[in-house]
Image (cartoon, rainbow, N blue to C red; front, side):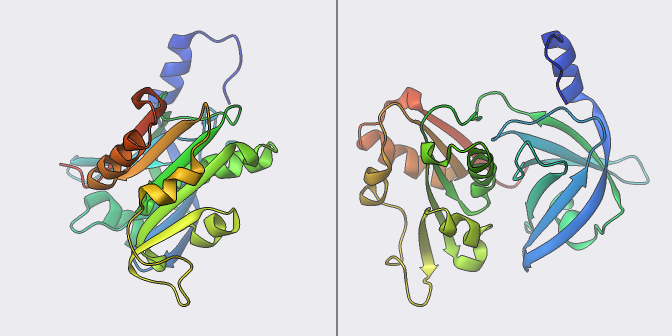
Length: 243
């Protein structure tokens, strides 16, 4: 945990050093998704919106790494990561199909000082697919500190099984948009998020957190700008297969 009074150099070092994490549990809510809970000794506290880098090292010394947003609240002792299986994904394939409880992983973090929220000011979170993960962290933290009223959410996925934490998000009142295979009965007509969906979420003085694929992030950002949201109030985090 971070101790107040440490220098900024020390705090940065704590986050950039590689640590050994032990896999406490693995869940598979869908065929393409794994939820990992990691025990990371002496880890610095994370903020909602931050991420960890997971590094795998082969016997010949070859390494591959991937960044994953944290889903768990900073108040929870373990770090929860949601990993989507990507086609030919070196890291995601191992984490979703091979890792079991008790395994050890190299991790570095928490990382990120821009796409973060401390639950003290209004925020609107808009996520697509696994881009909802940092928003789930924000939701959990806001609920724990009694400020869930400050956070409004809209999320989107191809189908309900493709949406991580779907039940939790729906229970919190998030607007859920399904773009291809509707729920039965549909809670909302099938289709992408629209300006009409986002307009009721707009809040004076809010910061807008947009997370998803590059195409999703670009489309949502344009919707927000068209609705009159200042560009400086929009924070975007894109994800996708690594190079």
